[in-house]
Amino acid sequence: MQDQSRTGRPPDVPNDVMVKIRQELAQSNAGWDFRQVMDLIYKKTRVRYHEMHIYRLLHKWGFKSKVPKKRFVNTASAKEKKSLKKE
Image (cartoon, rainbow, N blue to C red; front, top):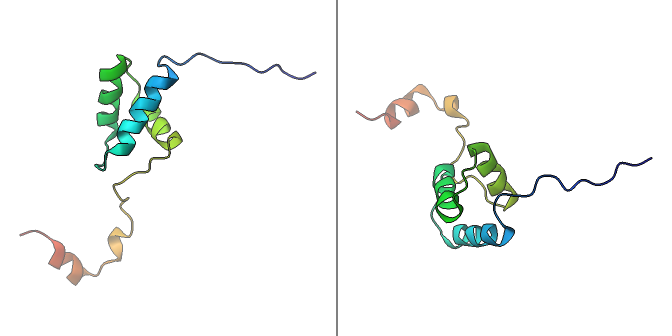
């Protein structure tokens, strides 16, 4: 016996509105912070999403993080680190 498919909870925001928001984000060349995306969605729909859901939406829409992750922090020599420090 197979389980029947479940539709789940309907989204709070209509799909056509989310498509418009996605297009607006795609047209902008500036980097988007999740807070800015959250505020944009709230202004247009009056629905407040949690920050993790914003990350899920952005990933689903094909957006990637524009800020590089901190990797290889300790690979520079002491001399290189000293040259990069602000005085």
